[in-house]
Image 1 (cartoon, one colour):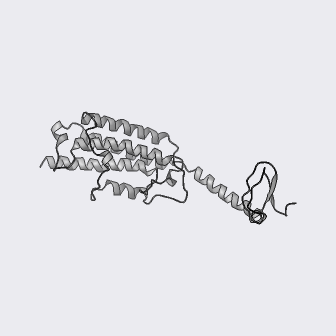
Image 2 (tube, helix red, strand yellow):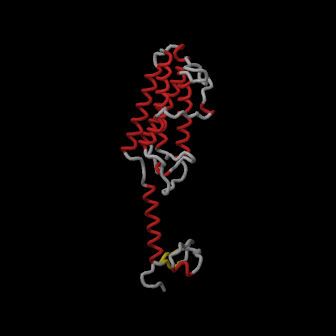
Image 3 (cartoon, rainbow, N blue to C red):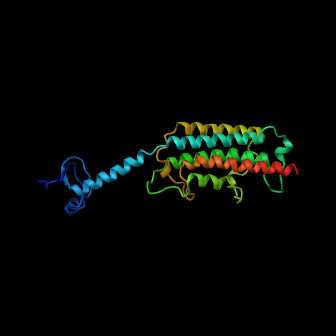
Length: 232
């Protein structure tokens, strides 16, 4: 017979470590048959179950979705405005030996857009860990990426390689890929993105959307620097 206050759980072929462990509230596994589970253990189980539910319920908030959409739309327009109407000579101008031209910057942004969207999909598909969170707040991340005070070397895989026949094609590819990202952000539930962290980078899966926007803005500033150098 169960002790007063104990909870009866009917299971088949119950698996327990020992009767002592059951009295301490150990979990029991099995398929038909029965075993007793003490009240303290049940409280632990309910607590763990509630934590699972709280994590699974964390979808994108309206504020997060709106912020990402706003940043992605704004940076898209900024790049188009910065590049449109430039001559081939202006697009090819390099402010110094080895420095990227506006054509190369545009190609880099088209390539990076694809890379970062794939990174988001990969990170979002991983299991959430409620114990983990991003190293920086959203505003701090945006600020750190936008500023050009500190130069950062881009990965070789997204270095300009004349992937496109023209800057117009590179810009068209960027717009197509950014529009896909925006449509995705607009419709995705974004389950637990705040608890899915990019390995070795410390940002969460949601912040990749902000990174995409801030990275574009960083290079728009670089384009403006190239234009200024060309006019001297």
